[in-house]
Length: 396
View 1 (cartoon, rainbow, N blue to C red):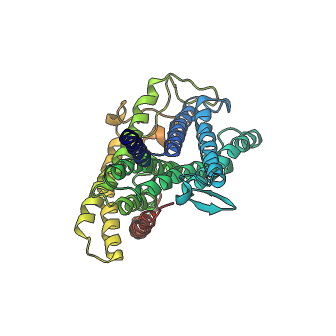
View 2 (view 1 turned 60 degrees about the vertical axis):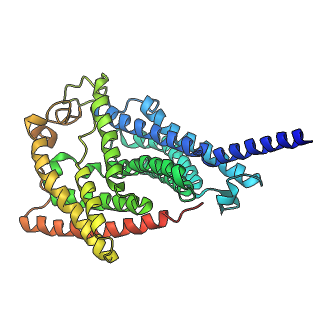
View 3 (view 1 turned 30 degrees about the horizontal axis):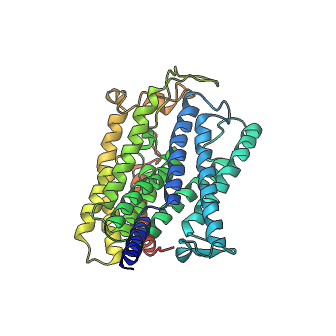
């Protein structure tokens, strides 16, 4: 009798340990969606380089397939998760799910499933668009916008799923999920900056519009991740990871050979064209975190004003002179990659002439727009803080 009780006790103990290990492991659907996001990031960077080096020669290129793998993988994974949570009454996810249109599942799963549908729908739409209006008409065409919205939905949905787990976790498990949150958040950085890339080329860096665009996209993300995690270096860590991933593409893609297949061809291309050197956002991120430590007792708007001003002033201080360097012959090497120019850039293009395009006609207009950029930085910081506080409440 004693032996049977001892055996039963050992079985119960092992079961409890197994349940505890499962509870403290990262769920499979988080890893699945992270893999989908990484696939789209690699495919997206490769696809842009392909268009600048080779041209759009077919839908069935490897970069396009990697992008669509994101939609398919996240759609199937999150679709299965939603259906299993809906129809399995004993699903462990059910207690932390929401109800939508009669289905149940984590909020992030619904976002990822919608993003997957949008991405898959954009593929035939893009094919038709190119057939009707020509190849590479513009970056922000309707099918590309739909694709970008789908990818953003999957990226944000993945962030929401991680937040749901992190906000219910403690100790080392929470720290592990926080690291995953930093990693997943860099893809929101990349998506946002990528959408605005037409306004962030180096020949725009001496115009106030460039700094206005930066003020609209960066402070909200820095403030959001800082408020969502309360980590003292949240903005710095996330921006450093984004910068490192961007540099990886800048330095790795040129290692692969390529040549144009569409005309007119103005540049001799022998390898894939890399993305531009990343913006020096790491400096304002450090300033953002340092200032944040000193103003904890200030009012919301006073904090937003201090952080927004710290962002814009520090970014202007480093990016303006760095833009001069990027226009100089000293930057035309594999490190800064300013000598790698798309095949379709003609001899009179700003890429070839290495001259700044001033987006404001007068000095007065420039400073008015810089003032608007300052106001934008303050407002976006405030919005980012509110967004981060909302993310800290996510449990489902």
